[in-house]
Amino acid sequence: MTTFADLGLSAKLLKALEKTKLQTPTPIQAQAIPHIMQGRDLMGLAQTGTGKTAAFGLPLLHRLLDIGHPPGPKNVRALILAPTRELTLQIKDNLEVFTKGTAVKVTMVVGGASLFRQAQALSKGTDVLVATPGRLIDLLERGDVKLDQCGYLVLDEADHMLDMGFIHSLRKIAKHIPLKRQTLLFSATMPKDISEIADTYLRDPVRVQVATPGKTADKVTQGVHFLPNGDKARVLEDYLKKHPGEQALVFGRTKHGSEKLMKLLASWGFKAGSIHGNKSQSQRDRTLTEFRNGELDVLVATDVAARGIDIPTVRHVYNFDMPNVPENYVHRIGRTARAGAEGTSVSFCAPAEMGELQAIEKLLKKPLPILGGAPWAADIVAATPKPGQNRGQRPARPQGGRPQGSKPAGAKPQQGRPAAKAKPMGGGGAPRRAEGGKPAGNRRTS
Ligand code: ADP
Ligand code: MG
Image (cartoon, rainbow, N blue to C red; front, side):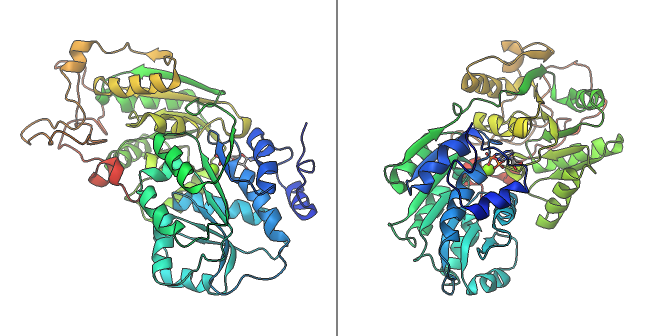
């Protein structure tokens, strides 16, 4: 079996690794590290939880450790772009474990924090800058950071960055980086836009792949439960009660709905928290820390807020609302069964969500086992307002661009279905807006 020492990593890094749980390289690490050490551009395709951070982090640090003199003012030697603040922080924390006791400096810049302080932190230069694209562009435009000495560019979770206007941002950022550089791209899925980014920004890349994109973590036991929206909360309660003491991550589609669901679960006695775009960054950080520390049993999250976060203790993922993009299904269930643990995933499918389910099953190339209910008959689906159609007096949304996420409130299959005791997300009322109120393609922040 390959060891980290076999990969030729420097003694300093090997020593730092001894103190971590990283004892033998994961497959993506074993495959990617030698190429990166040779200076090749690389495209790494691997599901979440496969250890991509160390796959690029270790060889990058290996090269930076040897430099021996500090970077110039405002200069950056290696740039890592990641989609969210949480991920950026996670990468920085990971790298700092590896660089402990060395002179290599890691800095992060993200939105929602003081620009002034970030500019100050960069004024003396940094070896590694981990950044979200938006904030980096702000700093570049202000002249607070220089990338003309940057020899490494890492695009982490590139597919996740796409719906945040990434293609546009990358164009702006890449202009500042010399062409003579090493570029690494990591992604769990390989949509067409990502191949195009790879063609544009990578030079003769090695392609390293450890599982078919779209293939879900093998260790996750998956299933689907058919039920009307109004029954979802009670059924979720049943599932949660079946696994006391095991942490669950619940995905809601909207900020508002996720918050309501969290409050409902809390009122039922669960230690529940939520992360979504309506929470301040410090609230999100606090909630994530509480969840990681086991002070919370249930975390309700939206896709954007939960992107890439690493919570190894999650045992169960519930898709309270089906993801509106099938790739997000893979990302969601990748939150469990991380680093070799077992996990389960249950997807709740209301009549209006049959299309999403079919898209997921097509991506997975297999049907999800049925855990409850029965697939909705075509006539029930037809009688259900489709996402984007509002019930009641308000006019339907214009046709055309698919309004993601605006599942009509109270998408009940039929009159006369058993009324749910609680209706946190689907229980009538005013039509809700999608998270951010915009089509996903325009979403900027979580
Ligand atoms: P990805 O970026 O592919 O989603 P991460 O880099 O976040 O994965 O790693 C997922 C989890 O696996 C983290 O908790 C990390 O510490 C752990 N991990 C990474 N590499 C190894 C390894 N070689 N051995 C054991 N655990 C590892
Ligand atoms: Mg990652």
